[in-house]
Length: 269
Length: 212
Image 1: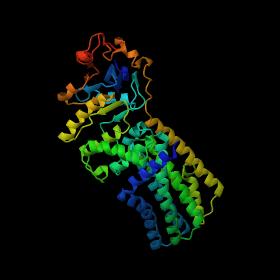
Image 2: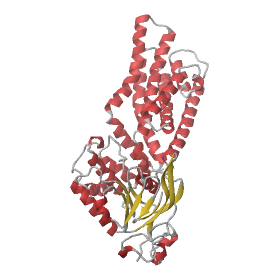
Image 3: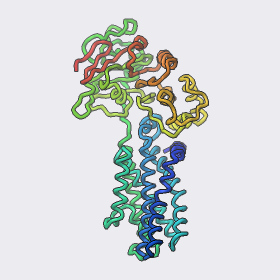
């Protein structure tokens, strides 16, 4: 894998993404809307620990959903260019990981700011919250990559991501990829959890590794080029002086090629 | 002297679900030759070119070709929010070119295609014909011995279109093998061979063919 090519892919998709201004606004606004709509309800109806936790988790899940969808769009958004780029000399893994790098940079810009914003609004452990949301972002990028690899179209991919984040907020949570980061976020909100910090981090990292590996394998399989057979050795110019291998039909009749280009026997070998 | 074969297609068949598109197609293209692939809509022209480029697998048969090739797909493989210059650098890096080399090589191709000098718009802001010029320039940056073009002149203005066919002859003279999918039957005198594909899988090379 070439670092130059990897960075070129990341830089170009970074430019592409930076010019999608409306998408970026929505990407930043979505977790804010999730979070502040909950906060406004809290202010009106009084505050319990569970309410505080719900607002915190829903904001973090909004952030994860937005980053997953960004990864999905960055990977899928240039799918018509994928195979021409492979023909141009890129490796499939370079194209995919370069795009992942783009989204990770975006996530690295957004998530700390979001953590600090929550910290100014609620009584939370900033370090744990940043770690939880940051790890959630990394898992979300891997989720978006797997969704992009599973379904080639954006709409179906978004539905897959909605499904993952939706199930994440049910009783099946411990079996979902965002469980580890969710545990850190809950712990940051001062709520006792049974998991350890180390266990939660390990869960997030293992989830990321599994999702990424599955995404890379599926995506590389989807975009790969067919290997061409080597040209016959007899295609050297000297060997081609024999007229029997002249380009032509695979049928037993003479093709009507112009006389000046047609040797005596124009049948295919 | 007979030139070496650059593309050899043998017994290629392809079906989509139960619809046979290509049936046992075989042909060779040599250095310095141009092959026009013609046929009505749905006859399998684009599928055949995609199989030759390796972006689609054939159900049966083999394709042997040089490792290096220029492939210009019918649908431009462009990234909507990048400029032509950024595309040149992106594709150029894949080919191991520095940014300056990519700009120089691709810029010359864009100039030949009469791409507007100094255009800084992203490709989503370009007309169909102008996008296609970028698509063709990117495909041709490699300068390989085999050039596969799928109706590359869609949306071209008249001058660029005529210029394109002049260049097909120039590429041939320089030793490249060119395969062009085309509906422009008036230009067939400019090619060495004509492969006609028929709906249902039949095909004919230079007027002699295989029934579907």
